[in-house]
Image (cartoon, rainbow, N blue to C red; front, side, top):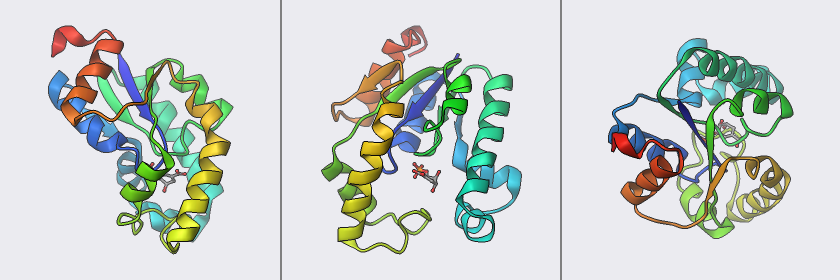
Length: 173
Ligand code: S3P
């Protein structure tokens, strides 16, 4: 089984993913880290040198290869990865979980963590709030295709256990 975690930047996919992986004794693959490792380039550098469209092609290519080859992993996706029809061909083979957060939560979480995120790294607070509102509205339809939506804020441990139970992996806890 692959449990995929999706949601907006700053929703906690990577940290919940690591926690869930630890609870289940499975590896956690973070799609952005995987791309950096395979392409030997940071995400910021990929955007700067080749642009967003090229990054999205890489995202699709590596998502496909992970879904086709890995078993019993947690897969933490980048915020834009679930936002194409093509990528859902792969995500529908996983147990997908949307970590749904309010705009305020995302803003508070992202405002100190912009540097590694090319879409927001140069933004001031007003621009960041605006981007969250606009992109979330554009993307929510894709995020809501997930099999499960977690829309309450619990501790990391409780969130991880809730996801494991939803996905039928509670016997591993
Ligand atoms: C992006 C989110 C990032 C990363 C890239 C683009 C997006 O991942 O994939 O900067 O389009 O939302 P996180 O969601 O882990 O920040």
